[in-house]
Image (cartoon, rainbow, N blue to C red; front, side):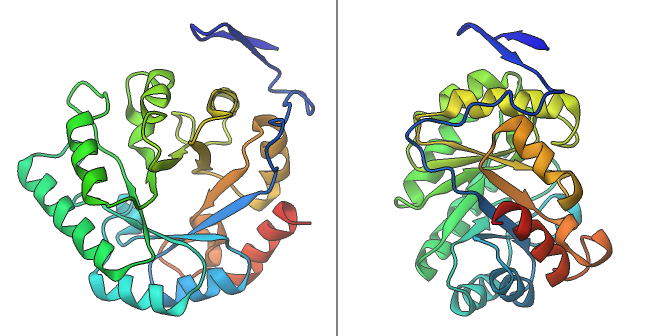
Length: 260
C-alpha cells in the first residue's frame, strides 16, 4: 500500500492489488486504442485490425517528428478513424526557439488545410514548465482542432501542477504519458498514472498511457491504473521493431484484451 500526498489530499494506491481502482462514476468505461503509424500502410492496417485512432508521425526512433504533407493527405484519404498528426520540428528537446515556433505554426496551418485532423504537440521552457506562450499561439492557429499534449509531459518539473494547467484548455483532450518514467508498466509509472487518472476525472482531459505497454501485461496494467486510453507503437509492430510495419496479429491480440 502506498499513500501519496498531492496537496489536494492523500491518495492511497495499492500497486500490488487487483481491485484498488474505482472507475469514474457516470463516465462510459469504453477503452480507446491509439496506434502509431509512419506510413499509409501502417494506418490502413491499424484501422482494419482494431485501432480507434492513429497518431501519425515520422522518425519513430527519434520519438516522432512532423510527417510530410503528402503523407498526411494520403492517410486522411485512406482511413476513416480519427488521425492525430505530430507537430514537432526537431528531436533535440521539447524547447523551441522563435524559428521553431514559426515552423510549428506553418505546419499547423497546412494540417488544418487538409481538414478532419487533430494534433499532437508539447512544448517546455528551460525550467521544465510548460511554455504557455507558445502553447497559446499554437492552439489559436489550430482553429479548434483537438490536441494531445505529448510526452513532453514526462519531462515537466511537476506533473500534477502541469495537469491542472492543461485542464484550462478545452482543446487539449489527451495527455500522452508514461507517468514520468521510462515505461508506463514500471511500478512507479503505474502509481503515477493511477493518480493522474483520478485527478483528470470530470475534466476535459483524459490520460493516454504509452511507452512499454504490451499485450501480455495489458490487462493487469489497466486494472492497476484505471486508464481508459492506451497508446501502442513498437509492441504492435513486426518483431516489436519500430522500423517494421504494424503486425495484424499483435494488434489483434491487444484488441482482444481491450474489447473482449
